[in-house]
Image 1 (cartoon, one colour):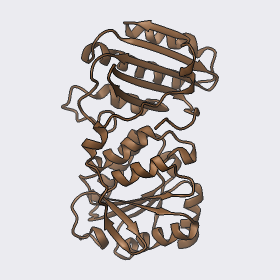
Image 2 (image 1 turned 45 degrees about the horizontal axis):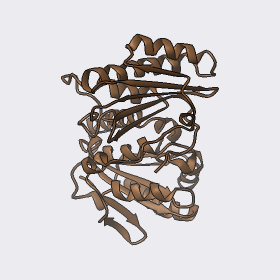
Image 3 (image 1 turned 30 degrees about the vertical axis):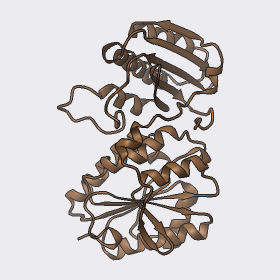
Length: 323
């Protein structure tokens, strides 16, 4: 039986909350975890180090909370979804009727690019709805940009406040949110002439070009290989499902490689493409899923002139996305 505000809820009870001090953070998180422990529910803390220390200090050793490295858990959105779904499935198989999870979702205030995490916050309303999870996503108003807070309010059906747990009137259906035309992120490198530009290339030509530019960077061989596979999938998708011409531009810097694959088609019809796991019976969608697993950052941008996939290998350190 489920407990607390989610007692009568089926599936994912997705909640956010806002705090402006360590004391406000603890006032939100401690009762959430304590009530779960008292109810005998699995409780998972997936915060970054600073907030994780606050939780550990508040509860002490041997408290029964499962502490997960938040930075590793939230390295990439698709990886976070894959990891959480496996964890939740294990808890349900062991008999859990509710699992409480709270963690730090990355955003520009902590140096992360927001575009794909905004998509994550919308997509998990479906991705976790197979499980009896109560998820709390607290955001620190001292460091979270205003545009991120707007997206957070639109992607969470519930809000935790000092007075309790409220239904969020500004929640937007995930399909509608993901289908919106958003300002496409661009790396600052794109203000310069590409190191390589290819018109209607084969996948082999793109892989060779990435190999050539990678020689002057500090990007690891593993990350270069992941980028090559991802770019292969992006070009193949553009050729098979998009519309010619296909334009590929590549920029390189000491710390990263950026690949932009553009075609004049409308892009994928599935708003959750790349983030949700692909069923074994499904034929399409595997390419975008692979890209989201392998790259440091992936941006999907639909505009009047077509569809662009942007792929970044190694540290996406160029700063927050526009818009």
